[in-house]
Amino acid sequence: MTTYLIRRLIQSVLVLLLSSAAIFALLNAVPGGPFSGLRIAGAGDKKSQVTQQDIARMEQLLGLRDENGNPIPIHIRYVNWLKKAVRGDWGKSWAVAQGQDVSFLLKSRLGNTILLMTSATIISLLFAIPAGIYSAVHQYSKFDYLLTTFTFFGIAMPVFW
Image 1: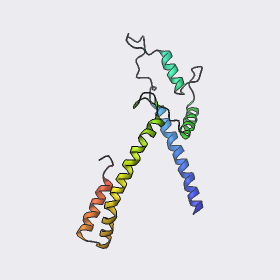
Image 2 (image 1 turned 180 degrees about the vertical axis):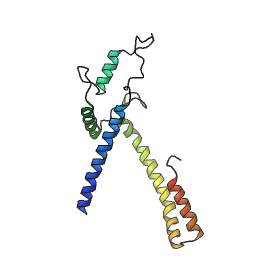
Image 3 (image 1 turned 135 degrees about the vertical axis):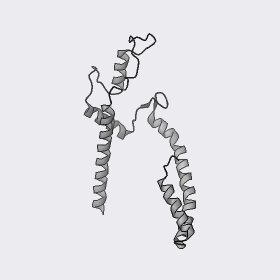
Image 4 (image 1 turned 90 degrees about the vertical axis):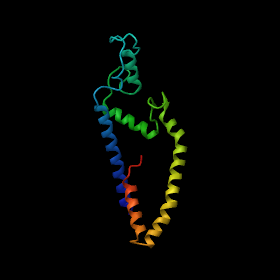
């Protein structure tokens, strides 16, 4: 049993590494860079304030380029990203909260998430256990068929509904 568990654990680690490497490679294969949507100063728009130097500095901060402005190879960026992910340094959020650490945002919302998850689990167990016992005792009854149908619909329904 322990050899089976060790083998499954090693397989899980390999699957996580391969899937994260594939996702990282696909995200880096997308045409353009993270700043390709920005309007560059001097490109026909007088109101633009982003310069090529600003973009180079942002790429250096993101770890896309080294101190000399040369692109960092993808395998080195992946290893650096993986090290940060294992340490819990997930960077800064630019979509939800401008410049705040992602780990801080996760920690600030974790309490409410656990409360909601625990409440939903307790409520569902309060209904599921008695219904399952009744259905097992009264097998092949109309209630059993109704409960089985309801259960199949509940399993098939997406979580966000």
